[in-house]
Structures are given as C-alpha cells and as structure tokens.
Image 1: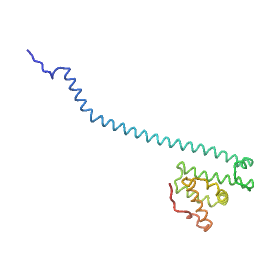
Image 2: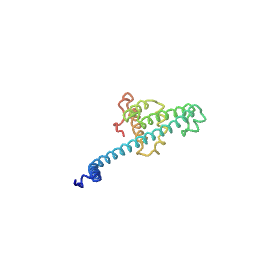
Image 3: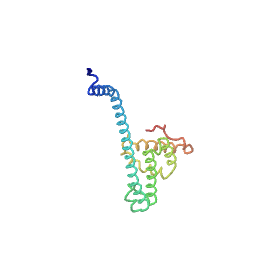
Image 4: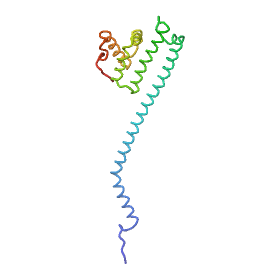
Length: 185
C-alpha cells in the first residue's frame, strides 16, 4: 500500500508555488512602483514643457495681432493717430515712432520665446540705440515705461536701454562697449 505525503498532493504544490511567487514578487513590486513613479515624473515634466510651449505659442499669437495692428497703423495715417498716444508729431514722425516701437517689440519677443539670450538681446539693443529715431521714440515714451512693474522684463530692459543711451550720448564712438554689466535673467 502506498502512502501519500501531504506535500505531494497537486493542490498543495500549487499553493506552495503561488506562495513562493508571492515572496518573489514583493521585491519586484517595489521596483515596479519605482518605475511607475519615474514614469509619472517624466509625464509631469513633459506636461510642464508642453504647457510652456503653449504659453509661448499664445504669446507669439498675441504679438502677431499687435504687429498686424501696428502695420495697419503705419500704412494708414488715420489709424496711426488712433493708435498713438504721442502728441505734436507729424504724420511721418508718428509712423516712425510706431515702427521704432515695433522694432523694440520684435527684440523683446525674440528674447521672451528663447530666440535671443540676454547677451544677444543686449547686443541687438546696442545697435538699435544707435538709431536716432529709436532714441527719439525712447525719449518720447519715458512716461509710458513708468507704469511697467519694476520686476518685469520690460522694466529691466528699460534700465539697460536708458544706460546705453546715456553712455552713447557721452561717448558715441564707443557704442559697442556701452551699457551696464550684463546681468540677465
């Protein structure tokens, strides 16, 4: 007569195998959880990048609308008068001021969306400051800049342009080395 040992029964072998697999899964469960956390962090990083890209796209679209309005105002004197807050200007001067504003805006936009870093922005501003129409535009709009928050990019750029124009008036032959220390964002 054969004796049956309890460990040899099929149902107990299956239970033992399942218990052994459970013990083996425990360390792998932590690895899977870690992998899921890594995936979640990567998804959050990708979401942050996509959000920033959407913000830039919206900024570009808003700027495109502004440029279209400026272009129409430059082409049509009656629209130029409606758009400009500067007084005592001839039709030609008003158009020039609008165009100088447009050029300045192009440089700021390029920096905001990452085309120019701070040093490149300052370099382009140095060249722009050499233009007499831009210098007149800058002098005419000093009151406009006073309402800009001091921590904004426009305020920081305004301080740099002010210093450049002051230095340029003092020594116009050294225009490529004028300006404050380059402290960007």
